[in-house]
Length: 322
Image (cartoon, rainbow, N blue to C red; front, side):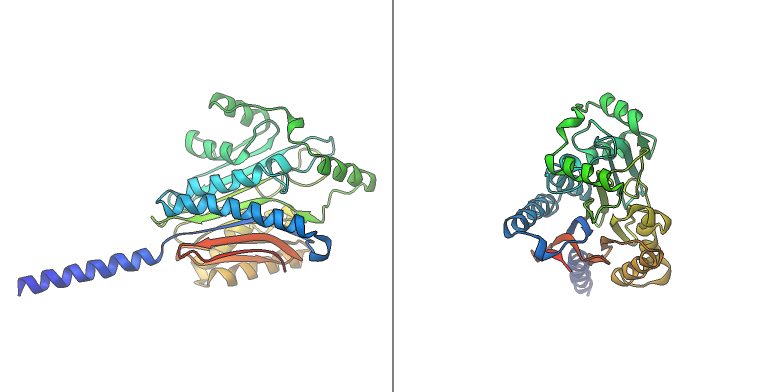
């Protein structure tokens, strides 16, 4: 009889492990939302966007598949997007009114609610890596401007000239915006990533160059924890992209998590509810996320959003248009 109970206990343990493993891992990214229309996109440019998103997803997916952490996966994916001229982050950042690049980024881990954020960065190649360093090696959450860069240097980061971030396309864009005296771009190229690893830990990260022709060191939602980025293992991880002022006012990322927590609704419905609040105030944009069970969400209220995911079973989707 004792042997039967032992065998039964072993079977139950195996079933339990299989159940846990079903909640394996997933990664989702965005490269910005806005007026993105197929008729305005050449086949070559569309392919370039999709290939770069695939490269970022593959980098994060490999880390997750080989039992790496969601933190490493998120950083790796975002660095690839930051290094590309295609997206409004890092190398492809838009320019401010004084024709400089001013970058923001944040990252948050769901197992301990630790977070790091930086804003107004002008000389650090990969802002997401600096945000992670703030999270892991400082007693603070949010550093800005020269102080953030001094911290970076103290931690061994190399600084580079601001003009090394500037591309001809972004320079033309800001000069055209200045002629129109406009700061509102028709595209929001913020990049972001959310990952769930095999250990059940969720990490979210977001990085941006902000808004074309911005003045007075304007800062959007990206580095504000709860607005542009949020992660909690008990609910979900969220990364936002859109008109930052409206995402701040609606505390978008945290609002989605809170609905899952308090209302017990699914991540897709929570995202729709929050984006409706943003739209009702006059804002637009999108969100990506993964809940604690590995369900992936990609929602937006614009004409398009660069987005994609890979799940643990190998299912992959990369899309641009509505």
